[in-house]
Image 1 (cartoon, one colour):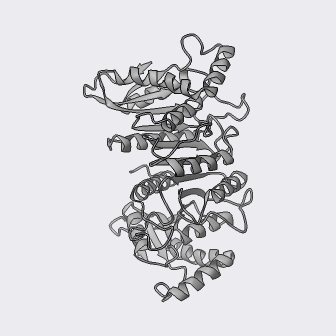
Image 2: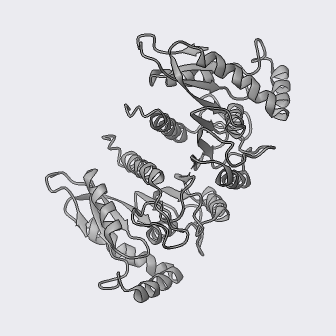
Image 3: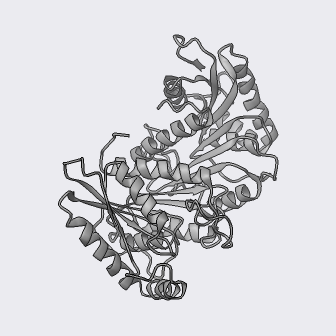
Length: 222
Length: 222
């Protein structure tokens, strides 16, 4: 799904939005919409393929397959980047913003040398089977993490800090107290254990993402 | 040292600035000046007492004494808060911003139930001998931490996350990649091992502090 303000005529940075585990849904589309309102050309890709989102069994199968095969995960995302980068209003600069499953995806892109300006991981999995190596990471990295996220406990946070200290050049990690996994999902009311909307952290992380993207693209217009 | 814009006539929040290990110096005064320019009434207190800053032996003795006696550390800071709160232009709301030694100080104030609106710890020590307990922490907390700070290694970060998860209500921790201890000290050129100025993290943490204080006092004017 492409979202952009067609009244803006100049070429601009492109933002790839990578959805959470449920697939390309109202959450991912809503976040794409918000980013478009900030003046970016946004493409919310579908990592699973037509017809998978909404089919729980096929969704779980896709997640497990892509989690286990990080190369394939990156290839799927690259297909989305290619679509975005070929848009006539994208000026050659691309960043990726991912949530949950998508957060893991954009970190894998960063770890594996993909040529992005920046990546933002929001309540994504921080662990990996192939840690970043010095010199391999090109994008600036921002991680927005819930302190109570049971899928990424403090031990994963430490491993991530150590991995980034070893390998990455420009990265930041924000830990939000009181936030569980999925803290930006407005509809997460606790039906899935460990996943809960947390309004203060949604507001704060949205502001941090906006600032990160502004700094990245030197827009300074917010 | 008091710093405020005397052209502003209305009563406003007060900010206590707590200096780093060297004592009340140009760094602490410069940070106080910046906070005053944002519209706060700022008091940069002297935790050591007259004539100590600049005398290396007395400074070390003060640090060691106050590190070992956290109750006394808090009493010294409270004296500063009292001076600030009694200023006719302070509206009853007070936050504290501390650097290095001062960062440790403001976290101890938070841990020990001091009635502040917010505290900001910038490259301060995160460890404590008396961890915060549920219900004891009143202020909102923001921690700005250098990922390469040898005085607060990743293990201290994890312990702090776990302490805050257990005890605090509203807290955030930002880890800045590439930043060592003392990353806001413009004059730190590496002569002290582990201490180095890091311009990107200085800029980013300053913006985060400004946003935190604006949110805290609902100023929304930046």
